[in-house]
Length: 110
Length: 119
Image (tube, rainbow over the protein chains, first blue to last red):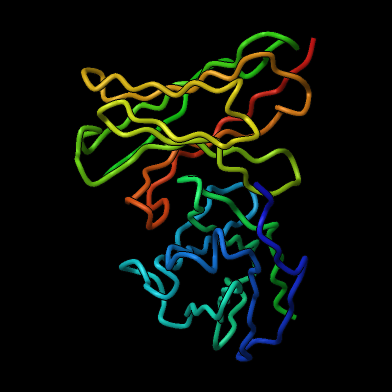
């Protein structure tokens, strides 16, 4: 299975909104509403930020939102803050009953 | 509060078998709502899903690793384990164990353990 495609880097100024894309195929992202997003700070374990395309776990800021159109899912961070600087990964359930992660995106707060 | 902790050797020789155990505390591994999985991350690279197991023993593996991976569960010890055979330097990575909410993502993670493959 091939990794989902994400941009290598995205940047924005504090207070701005940024969007990270995650492109797969009809066998993963496009075929199921089981896309999740993770935030990972250096040296730390990933943290679940979004599941089921657009649902937020308890405790996750409502500045984080998710959506999907066709084979591409997106994570939007609004009101960008310094603490949002991290790596972000998408993940999707697949038609093989497995999971696949995205290539990862480094978010920089300017 | 649920906690997961990986344990096992930090150094494995090429061609040998990597073995790790994840101990779950603060909750039961036998819950019907969850799977239990392994994810790895080579130094400076992205995440790779290895596989997951249900408390009954049902397993799902990454097709690219399937021939070398075995995940097992010991409900009496509230643990699950990973074995990866015939390792090479490409298997050097931080290995994480995590709880998987059925199809919805991994909500609890261990801190990760670095396994280096080297002679």
